[in-house]
Image: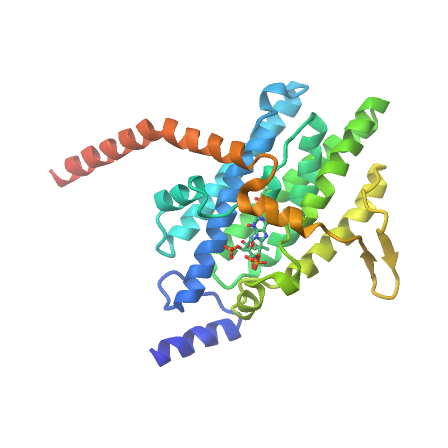
Length: 310
Ligand code: FAQ
């Protein structure tokens, strides 16, 4: 046992990857399952806010782009559930925990999409925040998760660019279109900052996850990186970020920004955001409606196994 623990510690120390068959502390396994499952759930629930606009896309081109993006999100979710399975988690159980409200998913997907500009702003800010958070996870210590992140980040980059391009197009349009973009930015900016999680002094998991090299940066470090990245992008776009305290601090070499309403994050995480009930109800209905597919696939697999055995 001491040997195994030593080998695990050495793997982490040398920046090597922990693989599914390696011994790992129970806490490491539980933390990885928690984070990967929450991430997978976020991708699957995250299909809904934009998915609601597929039938209302303003052109065939926009519809094709949005369909591709939402399908990518489904792919990311399945990819991540597979990574969780390599740790011994059961996918059906994880889905059960999501629809019973026993496991979390990202707060950001509990806000409504009120117009097509929201699709652009989700691409720009939400995928932008996701990239900021996930690029360092490509160096996460758990091999299957780190490798999954490489592909996911490439696709998220496409998602971010499509959002920004959509917003650029709208900003070149009519006054009404520009107002739609600004309104969407006003609604999504603060929730995007909350995606990075609670502040470091109120983040119970960060220290342990950093020591295990699951996380490579703290929540506040990544949030700051995202603010610094977004300010020039907002300027290029011609929108105002809704924060009167946002300004460059030459001494720190970063932008200062106003206080975040952490009670809102708490409210949304604990199930009381604007759309929590609707998001989970839609996921539950999809799961129940898909029962016949799972049954048919199981029956088919049993038959096929019988044929091989016979
Ligand atoms: N929402 O101690 P910490 C996407 C929870 S991107 C809900 O700081 P940790 C792409 C946290 O889990 C979004 N819950 O926790 C996309 C913990 O829960 P516990 C998904 C939150 O893990 C784009 C508790 O609070 N990305 O889907 C949130 O060290 C567009 C205490 O927090 C990922 O999941 C929150 N915002 O750090 C799809 C990335 N923040 O212990 C569609 C991977 C914290 O009670 C469209 N995850 N919590 O179970 C991570 O990097 C980390 O888990 C953090 C949280 C940074 C999210």
